[in-house]
Length: 470
Image (cartoon, rainbow, N blue to C red; front, side, top):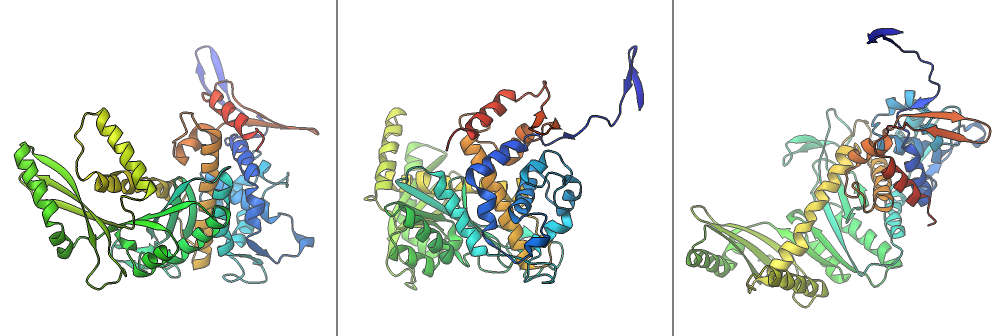
């Protein structure tokens, strides 16, 4: 093919470059998955009723192809009709000629309970997949941590059809599902698809109890804190936490009863702002509280954050918690806050305990919103286009394992680099989307990357760390 000349030189193109891929960085994902033995363990979460005599693609290979495709940015099964020939992605499978097509991969998602049992002989065990998420989190730590925080939250998945168990949700003002996520820092521990019109806290107690029991089996002495917004202030969850030595800190919906109980702190804030001649002042109050219904079983500490601004009404937000000033977590936070105030030459306020509970312990849960966005946007957790509920549930979990794979790569291979805090989409563009020529011989498979690749040192660092002994 002849194109316009470049000066005196002809510009010619031809499809004769051999086996070339645009996803050369898949070798990093391959190595990260092997360090965790991810796909063999994930395959153990399925019932496989296929006749071994007629199997060309093993279940670990099918799962590796699907999950790795998500990590590389291919969200649809249809993409694999062309990806099955990709020379780099074929490294994820023992099958060297051709990977599975979209039809074969569809039989993984359309399991025995949702498809024709003659053709669909794979069935996921969701409870085993949830346990595997927690096991991978435990394996990440060489030594048990002193304390951990479990962040729990619900989000929405919009659908554009009449998928099974989807429903209109008045809060989000759209039809869809209401999945439940639990994270510990950057680690995903739970991903559960739920019907679209359920209570936001549905299944939260069972999820937390399952995770806590699994964690304490390996780490019996670990101090656990559950952190959530006001949608999870429910009697069963509160009483279970109290009975099982699990602390909690939840947002609390504002009402007139709470506002009356915070009257003293609110008045002091307004008075202090006027006396100091400020236009804005933020203070914190702390008091014991139990609802009039007595549903909590006993009084708990409530923190009130009061923002007083000149010319506008006070803004008050509340938290409820089982923590107090005697808890080691709070004591450490107060010591750090005192040192920080001393460095900044700020006066120590009487509200320091309440301030630490709100700003140092509760507010960091906002980072969980970023983790949910990573799952939902960068790794396509918002895709729920299958008709059957179980198929959509399986998709959500497979997308969750793609997130786990990316997180392992970021924490183990990219620590201390410019991508140590990067979103999956950024890592994908920098490290995976590399043009490479694949040369196969009897003894080796070689990927030839371009000399002009700008992130060579970063790629080399990631490779070096992934190849280090575990």
